[in-house]
Image 1 (tube, rainbow, N blue to C red):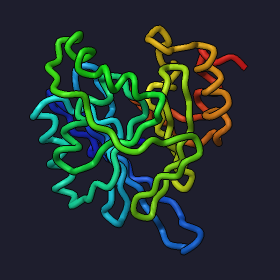
Image 2 (cartoon, one colour):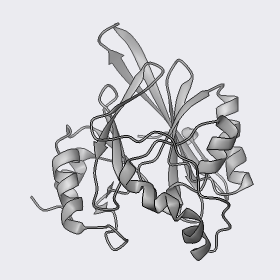
Image 3 (cartoon, helix red, strand yellow):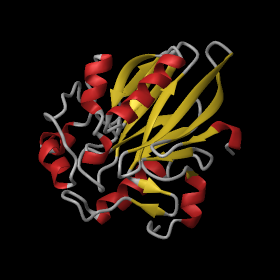
Length: 244
């Protein structure tokens, strides 16, 4: 439950701060991952900053398209005295990568992505223009990630799940200590990602959700690429698009 005091809204931005306490069993110390959610650009993409008590953070799906949105993201990082150490894509559809080059220029981070998402990245400029968005060069990118990889920041870890179906190259990021998963556009509250875009496939998307997400414990919180949070258990009971 998010307290109303934790929500700030403006014409350009909604953002939410969600503290997630967990116990690190190896040290018996309380570790707290915080998830800062921003809603950016005309597609209302959820951009996430994850950080823990070390101050190291990762930026996921930077959708900040203009100077105003970019300033909001940068100011939050500065105000919280965070150190960005990684940038990640859940997938490379245009709406999720509009702020990627800004992240590279400002924080010297080249986002990590699954190799199968590269064709979308390479068509970024022409795709953005088709939606009336002025774009510079195609974004730079860094390392490729794959199913099973572990991404570390501070004292925290994210496990990569490869989940195609909405788009080739789609991945989810799971944190087992704090019991959450960031799913991009794979799964939504009582819905799923579109499959009418290039490389979309309804049967493959169903398989990804059943085999990679629905096998997670029911209490895991789901943070999607658009709209509000849900949980694995709720979707297993209420999502009409996934057959058993």
